[in-house]
Length: 198
Image (cartoon, rainbow, N blue to C red; front, top):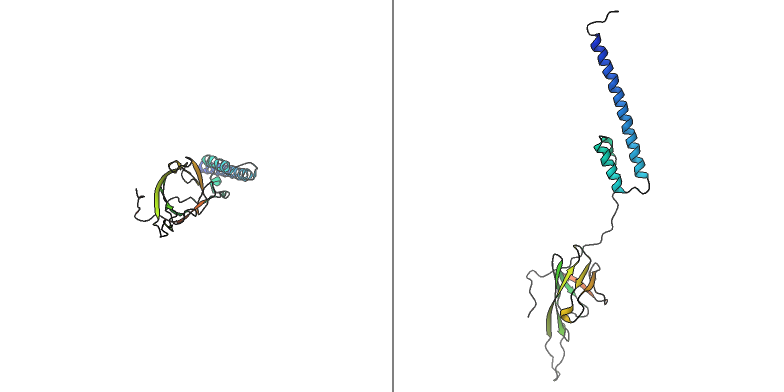
């Protein structure tokens, strides 16, 4: 048989088709192997979530499209407590009705308060037995946080004759001091903030 004028082109086209089919089979085999490798990596003990992500990213960069479509394991749940809202008004059970306010500016806190004589909610009696006026003594204490979102605050009580670095902790509803006393947060700061009287 004599070869026709188009026999060379047809033969060449068939050869290309065979090569493409062979190439697709090899690609499918590689994809299957990579998919099995990903499943194996996910089940190996000691392989962290971050390591799994890095492995899959490297495979994706290598041209394995299926690696990026495989479902990632769920993110590990991290128990995070509420971020303290330091600014606000507080109630001190040891000094009822006495002012306790905190103004936060970044990591720096200013505690504004007052002490009453004998207390802030009731007055005593003078030598004649008459009702004496309430005497309030204002004070201001500096405090600081070690980092943003910290649940601990360091208060300087030295101006009141106390220690300089008292570490108090936020317990969810207020500030608890080392002596067991707790200031309970009762609300935010007033719209028009007033500085302590001199």
